[in-house]
Image 1 (cartoon, rainbow over the protein chains, first blue to last red):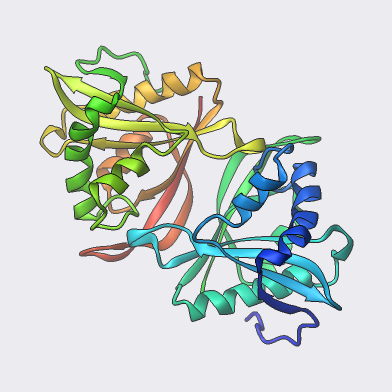
Image 2 (image 1 turned 135 degrees about the vertical axis):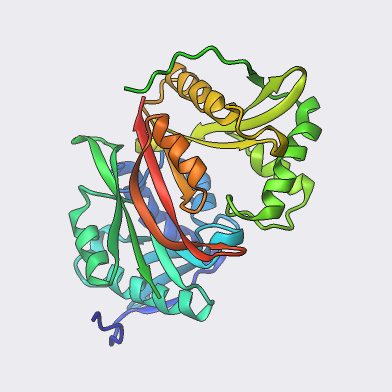
Length: 169
Length: 169
């Protein structure tokens, strides 16, 4: 059993347009590094924010001592007969890793997805070399249900696998 | 080995705007049935065509004796480090099943994807109860690399699995 009750030190709230600068400060170094998301490394600020805030994405920010230290989006992974499965993307500010921000956001997303009536959550593209993320999602109750061979061109490691990860809610 | 050289009796060519009516005659019964695509069963003609012709989709039609008997789209499954993997969606006209239309389109898509420089092809959501499609893609060289448990609400069977299927090019 994974305990989902936690005493988070982060406040997690819906993002507002006033958070765009803070969100971009998180997205930019992650997309520029090109190691964890299948997004062009040279993506512009406008395109990156449009991607994160795609219509249908519910965007949240994690705040610690007034600073935005993480952001995530929640959406339906499919429509029609697939609309009961949620999908999320998570990102932690470079200076705020290792403090439990991603775990707190993941647990928040699970609760939020349940409240919205989703019955499962699926991550479509967890890059295998991002080992910390893989272990974290496993510890949050997600299992690897698919291995996509060599689907990600890592900027230094070359082709690496990606995982599909899944849990019920 | 899967032979990819075939003497197709279908002409496969890029779709033009003049094909919209013919494409809709294929999409409509398939989406209304709701058994094979995670798309709302009551989707409108305009929304269905906009989905099939999403920017970035290269759309083809299969023609037999002047009639459009199938359609497919080809796109990049991801951007950035994932842009070398193609994705397709295929649909055969209800009155034209069992004649090899889907196989001819799949083989065409493999050649077209190779010509565009893709190095692999991935299907993200092959519904397990669509057994004919699963067997067909397997015979076209695709392997099941992931099983998504209960992610599709089938209109008569209830929750069914979907497969992620993959092949290199």
